[in-house]
Image: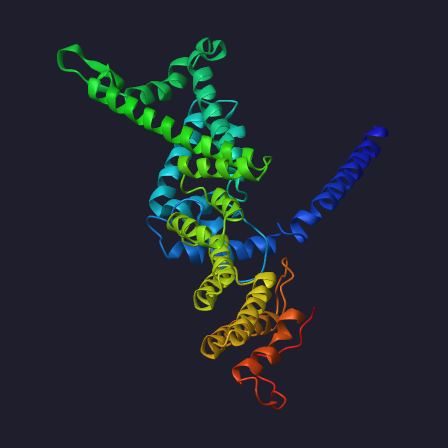
Length: 411
């Protein structure tokens, strides 16, 4: 009687201390860093705006990875949208999301109906996918299917179920599920659905096609990774073979482009853009290839396209201005003033857009800058250089009046 209140108080203090330790450990996860609540709020808002553009059927695989740099409202970091449900919505639309919801709901309902002990583990996987990118990994789906099958198997044939007083009632949901896989065969009664020859052949063809597709994608991935440790000659051959197995392998195309001449690089990158039209890296490589060939008009168009798909990238913004200024100087030296002015005008347009974006971003009341985006000093210094080219480079122009979009560069 004397010790009980003290023990209870000590237990309460220990529980409070444990809670404080846990909160201290997870405060970076909840209050700071890339995966914060504020970043996820922005991410979900941007993802929803992207999903609305193709709400019913989605936009295809890896939509977020290829599109988030172009649509993000602030420069946060997140190549994966932190919600499996949102990822499904982006890729397959409302129709695909409803099918997935029906699947996971039936799994959860079945485990609850049979009273499986594995039901909490399955619910954790289903619930956690709402706030993280679990469903991007096939292992999570395998675990969920495995838990469901094990739960049904134990409920239908486990000794603790068979010997219980409610064994018949607890096996009933599993029997109902098996009836869905049967058809009526006239005088022979019900037959298994897979016993029909046509359905057997269809199932075999679908499984065979899936296996061949998975094998081709796997071989392409293996060859791409193998190429990373090889010298230039074998690496080029491996990357070319990787693209033959999977023409949509954009990483293999980007790596191969680094080993090719600009004339060979351009058709390769354009073929890859057919499979990934919004990929920011492909557009940037194309702009660089045209720049190396001295084709300033095409380079300017692709620089603008690449920046539109990755607008908070300070390095790309600065390099595009520098390259176009260099092309303008090169055209002027080569005796082509018309192309020189066009290149300078394109560079100035990119610089003005860069400045305006930096101004708008600075004027936001509450913003996050995980990518450290700002107007670079190197880009800002190109204004006088480009204006001199636009003015003909023959007369000393007056000091430029400040423009609305002008702001001091930070670095």
